[in-house]
Image 1 (cartoon, helix red, strand yellow):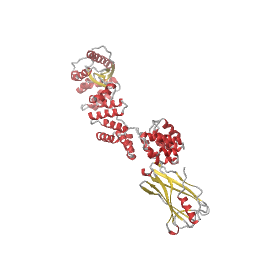
Image 2 (spheres, rainbow, N blue to C red):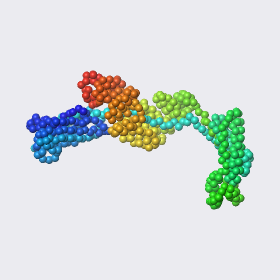
Image 3 (tube, rainbow, N blue to C red):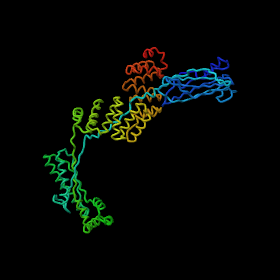
Image 4 (tube, rainbow, N blue to C red):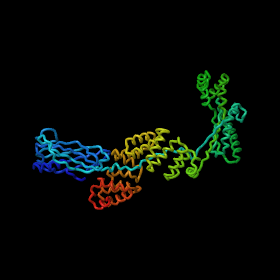
Amino acid sequence: MRNFKTLLVIMLALFVASCGSLKMPDQYHVNPSPLVNKGGKVSFTVNDTIPAKGFPKKEIVKVEPYLKYDGGTLALKPMLLKGEKAEGEGTVINFKTGSPITYSDVFDYKPAMQSSELWVKVTSLKGGKNTPVADVKVADGIIITSTRVGHGENVQLAPSMYEKVTIVSKAAKLYFAYDKSNLNLGLKLNKEAKSDRDSLMKFIGKKWKIKDVNINAWASPEGELTLNQQLSDERGVTAKKFIAKKIAKIFKSKEEVDINVVAKGADYDGFMKALNASNIADKNKIANVIKSQADRLQREQQIRNMTVIYKEVEDMLSVLRRAEIKVNCFEPKRTDEQIATLSTTYPDSLSSKELLYAATLTEDLNTQLAIYKSAIKNFNDNWRAYNNAAAVDIKLGNTEEAAKLLEKANAIKAGQAEVENNLGVLAAWNKDFVAAQKYYQTAQAAGVNEAYNMGVIKMMNGDYPAAEKAFSSKKCDYNLALAQLENGKTADATKTLDCASKSGEVYYLLAVIGARTNNTSMVIDNLKNAINAVPAYKNEAKKDKEFINFLNNSDFKDLLK
């Protein structure tokens, strides 16, 4: 830490020269020096010791620190020192033994303060007069390395909702007469169900590849238990023969189709559900009578008894004597190659889901953007297309266009997690970290993993340990290295940057690490690479107090000419 003569030193030295009664302190320093921005705050401490017989007993001194920066001056809290016999307020300095003096303050950082100086104005108040003593610079700064967060935030793509495999199903029923398992399409219920069977045949007629056929066969619950199970078995076999014959006729092949039959037995639950939903006045009474029977035989007998009294009960039972046939087919799909080709040649031939999926089949950002814009053109009410185009624009640095797209996405369907996340990224890039945090919190509540993005907020708030933890999900990451450096882990930060993709910001941070470890070649070599990659780093390095100890280095000066 570089030592500076503090406000006390200056004041006391001048007093010595003027009256010969003051002595220089034995120790003095400003900590930190240069000053440092941490989480938008700059705090510092001055520690000094007034030596024995170094402060006149009747002296009163007012010390007024202030920060001079481009475009302004910030007055800091003043401090009063007084001798043992002086009247009024102030910290008493013991004449005989001397006294340690500590001054601390904190102020809000502004970007204009990076190139700044800490000054003190020293005034003697002895005798009720305001006698200027000194106006001297005591520290340089401010270091802002912690704010050099990279644009590594995660943008979020809304899922395309495209399914590479889609199972489409169609179902129909076959009904059976009481105590029968043979197929009788002349039954009233089968005549009424003809339209469903026709729809099923039309569905099979598309000749999509059949995944499987599932059949559930049932009996009504008024019959004897063993007979009901046998009936449901036989009805399942009948239904299987029926659908197998239809499939074979349509496909005209002997290809095996997986037909799964489950004989469910008596559908007691189905009967009770129908009873409870009926308009029978005595339905609660009927239900209680049936439920109160000691065993299944008695329950079955009571149900049979009810068919004699209530015609509606027989109607309920008739629809339970059935076989449910469900055919599951694979919906035909284009290959990935076909989708990728059509997305850039004939995008209007694809569905919205196919277009959004097509963009995931390429790594080229410009191609992705073109596909998403095609999706917007053809499906201008699809918020996912707008969001995903915005996400790509963010990656490309087109922040203004991204903002417009996200605004449109939000107008179509507000509050979507992916949109909230991406709005947060834009806010962070615009240095509005309060708004960014709110967006991230909304997205996080909706299930988005915001750990990394929130790490940027934690970094800007000065919580470096939490930021390092948040960034640790990525290896060889610039922001991770920045957090490690601010946590004092220079070796870890160097290792992280060594395997990171090289860029101007990576080289610049390596130069900063070199400055903090007093490694001249590391400073010069990396700063040169940083300037070659981003020429603006030349002017940045000129005002960066990280390099204050290299200002007189000839290689450093030549590099910044």
